[in-house]
Length: 389
Image: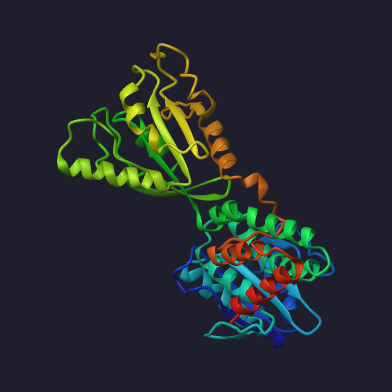
């Protein structure tokens, strides 16, 4: 039986075939009913009435035929209704979902659907969806569609009567920028250490696609190698740099310098030392100037072997050390916990607004420099209007 014609339009709003995740937008009065026919919530029930603040996880398919896992975000208003369906970004999956929606009566658009109610935040969100790499990132991005515009509008209105309260609200949004950026764009974790201490073995331990050659011979890694992984839903670019050793040829010296630059720029710095060999006094003295106290973790590897240092851990390193065995995995859970802690993910509440792009952070920082409520309100309003053009 041919399904009734749906009063809905559907289109892919993320770059075709380029994104890790794809967002298909369905708009129109009949959009919710159409989605109900093809999407099956994991918990087996739909919110009633539609709840704009919720993301619904489940599967999309035709009857018992599953196409993909999906996340549905509903924005139902008096004068319009929009449903965003997030699936994996493979071309075949996107085509099958669009075909399924067409079979249910939706009018498929080749160009992105313009949303009259969309703001500059929505444009940022659509771009962020295109590069999202984890489900946790997708959930955060989708939640900001309503949270961030509503918060900024409230701050604009509050500033006229209570400058201090508005400034505190704005400061909270700015404070979430670093962890939000790491969640949306990914965090860079760089590994540095002397040659043959197990850096590549540690990188392979965390990588979902091990690609680093490991050997007992020094200098196996001759240049920095980047791999993608995730820790606690946070996308991670894991950078394994060349082992630092003296008396190397010019080519390897250049590789070491390039690795040092990547290490200095990283969100997390992992310094790997070998606890089964004598303490590397020279290496520590030469490289310590580049270690940043707020983002350094000293990883003492090879804890499965006999301890060789004269003391347990030098006192000035003790607060930042984690003992692991990259070979067996012992201690790696604690190392993951420390990485998440340094990235301040505990301060990124899923139900709170946070700036997640450089442009948003700069606009908010500009408003925070205002010294009275009227100026702050004007600055927030101007920022919204400027960013939306």
